[in-house]
Length: 270
Ligand SMILES: Nc1ncnc2c1ncn2[C@@H]1O[C@H](COP(=O)(O)OP(=O)(O)OP(=O)(O)O)[C@@H](O)[C@H]1O
Image (tube, rainbow, N blue to C red; front, side, top):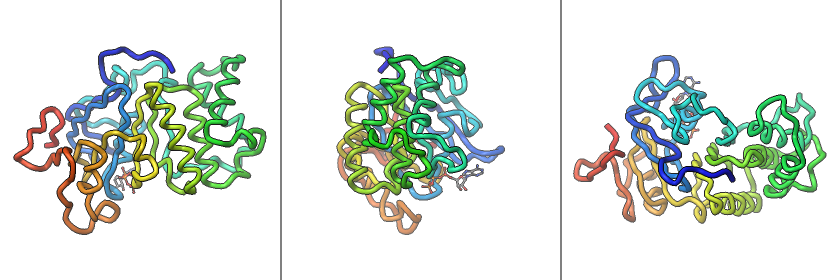
């Protein structure tokens, strides 16, 4: 993994609003993620988790406030390969008859820049990324011939191949069987141990509970909880998937950011 400055933050949102057109979906959010953290982004369907992640990547417009990634304002980060992204519910199009190796190699190109050829070290990194997700024996197969869960693992490998400093994943375990979830958790634990910052949008913290160290709960575009993963499920409450029922009090030492008695510092939502 490439070196990152000892000081500074991997992700910083200050009073940030992100949306589509001129409609904010995420509103006036403050969030700081330090290098090396493994953050879960939780919340109900439609709460704004994906929009938050897409705003970080410059895929959804920032409508107000500040968003910084690896120390640079969003959109100004020159080396895009420093940030890896596994999009939500995305499989590889069957119309493109690319092999596993080819799709993952494209991820490596993000680090090199277009029009540069892969060298031996790059090819090794591609092989390692594919092996890391348990698909080494499928390397030369068309991705379209793999199952949906295996295709998601290919997309994880594509992101890993660039050896990013920050890896943003949108529901990486969705539609992936239990054995593959365990394999993915092991991969992310290794990646995290090397210092890579993880930001994982997810509905299910169980498979990655050994990796994720902190969680935020997004609710109607605001961050309502920011603290240890252990307290987040309670903060997300029974309405986490469908908005039904009032949220429960969090366990553990996390912060409910909608409680006036809590000192939220820079993380308070408005
Ligand atoms: N491209 C878009 N244009 C306009 N509105 C959008 C767009 N994408 C998402 N939205 C709206 O933004 C809101 C939040 O969606 P988002 O996908 O961020 O939620 P989420 O928390 O990731 O949900 P889920 O858990 O279901 O994936 C929804 O009301 C959705 O309809």
